[in-house]
Length: 117
Image (cartoon, rainbow, N blue to C red; front, side, top):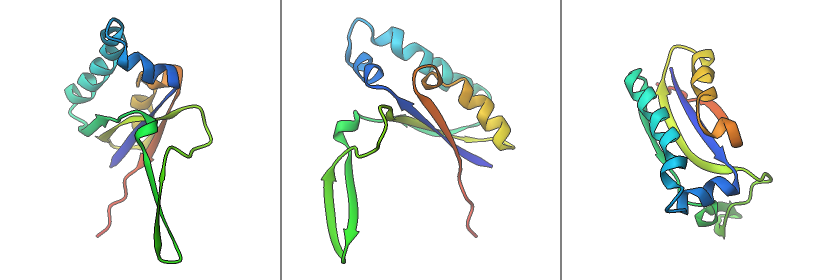
């Protein structure tokens, strides 16, 4: 089964990405985590995301497209990136999610990816 591991990071984490001196210290655990997923042969894809302020929210109201600058989520943490993994169960996906660096300062969401046929 495929699961999406969604990393929610706090504002300080996003700032640490921009700090030239602290960049490696911040990113090395992410590189290690990504490497562990790859070495376990379960990584299907993943990517870091730009700061939440770069988000754009789109909706339809009465058939008209509405576009707003984002984010509009009621939390201090914002989505910082994701990993798509292929493992046998949600329990295994949660074990991997607990190893994600975002679990230490934000939180990590695990969501099954449906298969439609």
